[in-house]
Every structure is written in C-alpha cells, then in structure tokens.
Length: 325
Image (tube, rainbow, N blue to C red):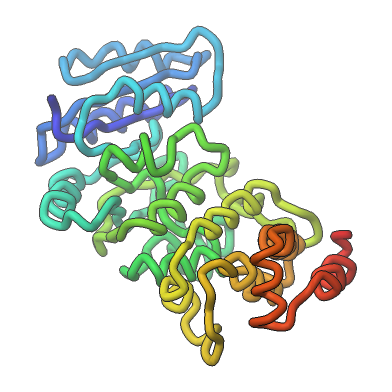
C-alpha cells in the first residue's frame, strides 16, 4: 500500500496535464500512487494521460461530465494511501514537495493537513505578475500565509474567509473521508473550517507548488455577496455551531467575551454576537439562525433571559432590523 495518494481531477488540460504528471514522477519521495479521473474531456487529455506507463498511475475516465466534485471524489474513493495530496491537472509540484509534507505528518501527529507556499504561473507557464486580480493582490500572493494555531485560523476564516491553497495540501486520509467528505458542497473552505475545529494545520513556508492562473479562476468573490445571502458561506459558518467549549470561544475570539460568564448551552447565542457586527446579510442570517436554536429551547431560552437579559422581543428586533422577519 502506498504512503501517499496523489489525486488529480482532469478536464480539457491537454496543454498541461503531461507536465503535471511528470512533476509527480520527478518527486524526491517515491512511495506514492497517482489517481487520475478524467471528467469526459473533449480534447486529447485522456490520450496524453494514457501515454504514461508507470504502474503507480491509476487512470479512470468518465463517459459523461460530472463536475470537479464527483471527479475528485472518485479519486479519493479509489485511493489507498495513508496521506492524500491534491494536484490540479494544470499545476506542478516542485521536486521535494511530497517528501517535506510526509515528514511533517509523520512527526507531528496533531497536524491533520500540511500546506505549502505557492508560485503563480500563467497559461503560458510564465511568472504571473498581474496586480489586484483575484489571488494576486497588492504584489502579494494571498496563499502564502504564516502558521497559526487552529483557533487563530478559525478566527481568520470567520472574518476573512479562505486563503489556503487547496492544491498545495497533503492531509491525513480521514480529512477527506470522515472530517470533511470531499463531496460536501461547501468545498475546500468548509473542509478547512471543519478540520480546524478538531485539529491543527501546518504551512511549510517554502514555495513547493506552481499554481496556474487562468482568466476563469481569478475571481474568488462568490462566497459573500454583501447584499444577499450566500448559502455556501452560511453553511460554512454553521460549522462553528459545533463548538462545545466556552474556552474555545475565548481562544477563537480573543477579547470579545471579556467580562462575560459563558454558558455551554448558550454557545450559539455567543457566536451570533461577533456575526452581528459584520456588515453582511449572510452573517446576519447566521446570527438569527444561531440565536433561534437557543430561543426555541425553553430551558435554554430561560437561561438566556436570566444570564444575559435577552428575550424573544430582542430576537424579533434583530430580525426586523436586518429584514429577516
């Protein structure tokens, strides 16, 4: 059984897929399998993949296009490795990527996922240096972050959303099979929120992936239209409702709850408080949803009234003021 399963969803990338596969073959770490699922490509992508004869490559070809979620899920389902790495069919690993990520996961059992820094290239393979477009803003690659604790990441995700580069990641198998199944509609952002609710993640501060930028993937603004509810983001925020320890709340939102005595039963109400301060209808909807989970339970509603002086009229006022009633 291989240590690492590299999973690649491929679609109409005849110009790039060969180099992507070769970047796996050229790794300094060789205990891997490469699972490729082609999503009914209409160009020569399948033929190029078939030209590679390494027995560690397993190739599956869909007859009908099913989308990247189903294609990636097929890779995960067919994989056997202890660790799972993601590779887009137009990106390239640098030579020591797998070796360095395996070392972290082998030596740090509290870490569930390891990311790396990335370098952007354009459709021609040249350095991508356009400013203020999508992932490349103010001369800075937004993916190249410093390490944080899982609580600091949960704070960052809550206020700033996702800036982790999914195709740079290597995870333990359970991240994709148990913690955050790959077919979940909230995608990689939801996956990393759920992962950090339980485990640490780690970023290797070294460029180990060439990430290709096309015109079609330079926008990441779908998550939060400010004047209407973004359902994917709302579903992602609901993951915070899985928090069960008041001390975790204090670590995720340092200083916010100073002077408050927190009750485990009222955690959804406490999560609504920072959400209500964010000028986004999605966050307002999340806050109302969270508070309703307390208000609709008579025992918890009474605790909320006694401990914090918050009752049904206050709840209705929040709903009316945000046009959610």
